[in-house]
Amino acid sequence: MLREIQRKLPESYSESSALQRLAVVMEHAERLRTQKPKDKDKLYAFHAPKVSCISKGKARKPYEFGVKSSLAITHKQGLIVGARTFPGNPYDGHTLAAQLEQTRIFLENVGSEPKDVLVDLGYRGVDHQNPGVTIHHRGKHRSMTKELRRWLKRRQSIELVFGHLKNDTRMDRNWLKGEVGDAIHAVFAPLGTTSAG
Image 1 (tube, one colour):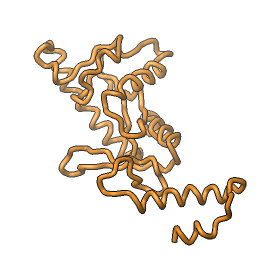
Image 2 (cartoon, helix red, strand yellow):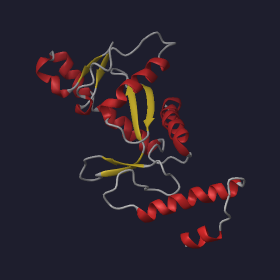
Image 3 (cartoon, helix red, strand yellow):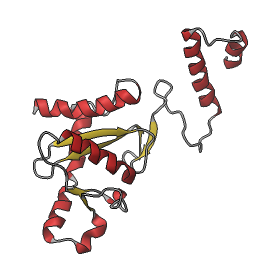
Image 4 (cartoon, one colour):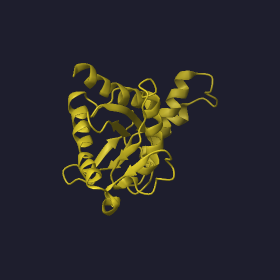
C-alpha cells in the first residue's frame, strides 16, 4: 500500500499542506513496518509518536507507555508544588535539576524554596548538579540522624499522590496533543486536586 501511494505522489509536494501531512503519515507507517523488536526509539503509537516505553519494574505492571512525569510535594502537608514531564524517558537523576527549577519558579511569590530533597535511589550521584539543596536517599542511611530516617520513610507518600492523580484526575490518559499537551496535562491534573480538595 505504501509503494502504491508513493507511486501516485507528484514529484514535488512541498506546496500542499495536505500532501505534507500525508508524507508525515507515510514516514510513520514506514517506520512501523521496518522497526525490529530490539530497536531503540521505537514508534509505539501512530497517533502519538513521542510515546516511550517506561519500565516500572513491578510484577503487576512491568511497563507503561507514555511520557515520564515528575512531581514535587511538600514534606509536611503533601501539597503539590511542581509537576513536569520529561519526553524521551531520561534517567531519573538527570530530571532533578529541571524539577527543582520549576518548583523554585512556582514558589517565588511564597518566599520559600526547596532546601532538603527526599528521593529514591534513582537519584544517586547528582548532588554536584544540584547546588543549594541537600539530597537524601536510602543510600546515605548510615550517616543520617533519626529524624532524617523518619523523613525518608515519608518519601513513599509520593506514590499515593501519583495513584490519586492517575485515578481521580485522569492523569493516566492524556487527550492533549504533542509534547506541549503532555506538559499542560501534567500541570493541570494536580490543579484539579487542589481546587477540588
